[in-house]
Picture (cartoon, helix red, strand yellow):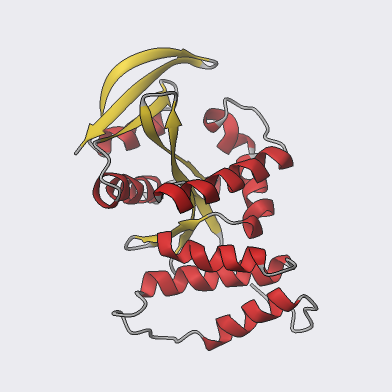
Length: 229
């Protein structure tokens, strides 16, 4: 990602300076490599987006506390700086087909999702994560936890078509599941999957989740799964 050296916004200039000061090899005891990669992604996205004021930058720095990492991926909380990227990703036909039953979310709805996620992370340590390769900047997808009616929290994810076939879905979903059951101490995590979404059914089953109910959905029957501690 190219950063404009003539950025006029003071917050963006501060972000650029922070990126340049980050160590190449951090002390693992102070800043794990995954957190460093996530911080770079966050600050660069903020600076390139031309955001104004210190509010977004403060949110970006706070998001690092909830970063999840895997062998190949960095999952970090979505922030206001990601609005355009999330809108483009979630409105892609192959992504929204099962995630939103084909519906196209509006910019206002995307903003609401981001704001809700920030509140949930601050209050309970979960929300929506953006997923990127640890060594790259392109958006791989999203993963998150959200309420499933009044039953509990369900895991959900989306994957950019260009990232299909690499095992990223199971890797990202497992990181979120382990965070929910381990770090958050949830007694169980749920999932709801369209029967016609064979790829997601396979991911959920590989996570060790078992079916417990079937409900009607806009695209047909949906199977509900759970995984307990």
